[in-house]
Image (cartoon, rainbow, N blue to C red):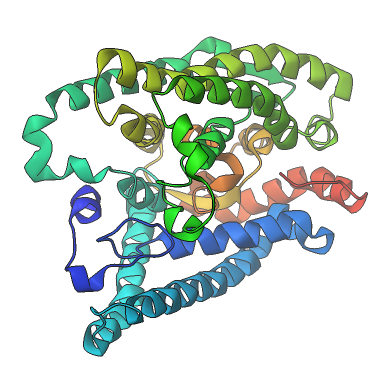
Length: 409
């Protein structure tokens, strides 16, 4: 249903020219994703707000409330800009604009409600499912699929490759209770570079209209300079993002077994090699396929197919966990990748079964998926006990933050 909703066009009068820049689409969950990302960024940068990101359900509840307010502001700004753009044309009709203003919030609230139902009763984070639907290229509408056999085949092969990359033993290493999962930088080196190179034609095209960005057309996917810039940017950005997400003192605070920052750095250097291999493969191979094999839309399909693969692998693991414990509920949302396994280990030592939902998806998206954190699932009857264990295990990290930790990523 999410795929069908995400790929069907709406009447021309209901076009939204802003935010996601995709004509013929309603805003959907885009304002929610932008609003929550903005709140997470502010909370990560403002020292007084940093404890809210890592202090458990109480802190997350405050950030969530602010996130909804920010989402409403983003939607209001988007509708205002759409109205102004529309007013400058001969197509403006007040009745249609009024319908647009009324329908957009209702549509977004419906998707939020559906996403929450999926999260509570399904096998995956519902927001991940519906946000993934927005990445389906317009060419993948059901009525056009009959002519996209090569693309569908290439997509399935790509998903098999991603599953192998994410499941390889080389992509996992332990530092005490902390498990380092590749790619340690997430997909951010790839997605950030691709977004910058596609500013004239990508999702942000409406926001960059009028800027002198014509030179970026020489870096369009498939061109030689695209591969050069992508390779250089990935090589430079991958270690940077790895350091951000695995800041030494923060990780050491979760390993009270005598481990030192030097030990962690050695582990990270080992993991960087495989992470570099993964990010270069995911960044360059889609363009190679599109240029050499001449399979269209490969670059457009690859990011969504990568996240879909992670989502399916996570759903498979959750299915197996629910076969053992059918009454699992979410008790803790965690945005720090290095904190997930120590928290789960604390629950296991306390005799509380635990499953971490969306680990692979979050490994790819990291900080830029505020609506899809890693959720710790425990039996419904042991929620109170689990919260006490998690608060105690997280205390050292909070104390480290009080000592002026520079980041909570």
